[in-house]
Amino acid sequence: MIIKENISLKEFNTFGLEVKAKYAAQVFNNRELKEILSSTKFKNIPKLILGGGSNILLTNDYDGIVIKISIGGIKIIKEDKDIVFIEAGAGVTWNALVTYCVEKNFGGIENLSLIPGTVGAAPIQNIGAYGQELKDTLFSLKGFYIDSIIEETFQNNECKFGYRDSIFKNELKGKFVITSIVLKLNKNPNLNISYGSVKNEIDKLNLKKITVREVSNVISEIRRNKLPDPAVIGNAGSFFKNPEVLEQKFLEIKNNYPDVIAYKQENGNYKIAAGWIIEKCGWKGKRVGNTGTHEKQSLVLVNYGGADGKEILSLAKEINRSVKEKFDIELTEEVNIY
Ligand code: EPU
Image (cartoon, rainbow, N blue to C red; front, side, top):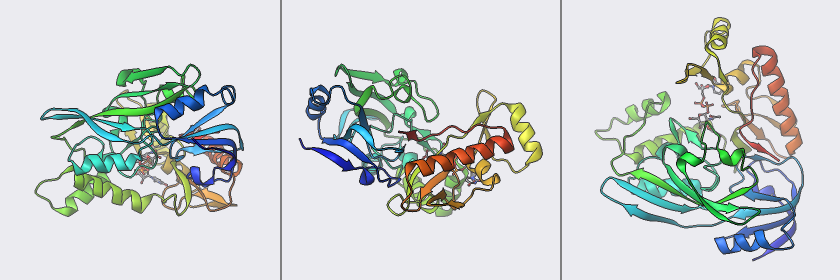
C-alpha cells in the first residue's frame, strides 16, 4: 500500500479546497484498512476517513492521516420473488449503486439518484432527497472501530438514524469506519412521486406505467438543473439542515411572510426550507470574495475558485447571523467541518 506524505487534498473534497494532509493512504479492502489502523506509526495520530469528500469543509491542513476508502464491490446476497438484499463496498460511488439497482428494477433508492459521494458516507448523514431516505432501505452495515480494530455489524435500528443524522455523526464520530452496507430493496416497488416537482415532470412524460428508471431519470434531471456540479463549481450540496420550529413560531413567520415554504412534521412542528430563509435574508446568488451562495439554491454554498475553508465558514457564520437577526432561528450545518 502506498502512503503519501504532505499531500494536497484538493482532488479529494468537492469544495475543491487546497489543504494539505500530513499523510494519506487509499485502502481497497479490509486487510489494508486494518493494516493502517494497527500500524505503530499511525496508531496514535489523528485519522480522517474520507469517502467522496462531498460533505466536508476542510478549514485547516490536516495533521494526521487521511484514509480514503476505496473498498469496491456490489453483489446480491439474498433474494426471493419480492425482496432483494444487496451488499456494496463503502468505496463504491453512491450513484453507481443507484444505477445498478435502477437497471435491475430494484426499488427503494431511485429518489436518491445523483447524490454525490460514496456508499460508506451515505449512512453517516442518512442521505435523503425527494421523499426517500437511506434509512428506509438500509438493512445493516459493517465496519471497524478505529481504536480497537474490532469489526462490528449495525442493524438499521442501531444506527440511530434521524434527519441527516446518525450515531456515526454523534457518539461514534471519528471512532468507527464503515466498510460495507446491505440494502433491502423491493422487486415490485411502490414508487414515491409525492414531491411536487417530481410529479410534474413524471406527468409530462404521459406514460402508461412508471418504473424506477423514469423516476431516477426525472430526479437526475431535476438535480442537474438545480444543483451546481462540483466538477464545475466547488460545493458540498446543502450546507445547512432545514430547521424545525414549533407551530407557534411557524405561524408567526407565516403572518409576516405569507409565502413561507414549510412542511408539517408528524410531531406537529414545521420544517422550514432553509433555502427560502436564506433567500429572504438577501443572500441568494450573492458573492463574497471567492465564495457565495448558488444562484438557483441559496442553501448551497460555493467556491468560485481559490476560496479557502475559513472563508466559506465565515460566510456561513455571516448567513447564520442574519438569519438569527431576521427570524430568530439558528441554522445548523449539515456538512462536517474539520
Ligand atoms: N427555496 C427557495 N429559495 C432557495 C432555495 C429553495 O425559496 O434559494 C425553496 C424551493 O423553491 C422549495 C423549497 O425551498 O420550495 C425546498 O427546496 P428544495 O426542494 O431544493 O429542497 P431543500 O429542502 O432545499 C432538501 C435536501 C436536499 C435534497 C432536496 C430534495 C436538506 C438539507 N437538503 O433540500 O439534499 O436534494 O431536499 O429533496 O434537507 C443535500 O443534503 O446536500 C441535498 C442537496
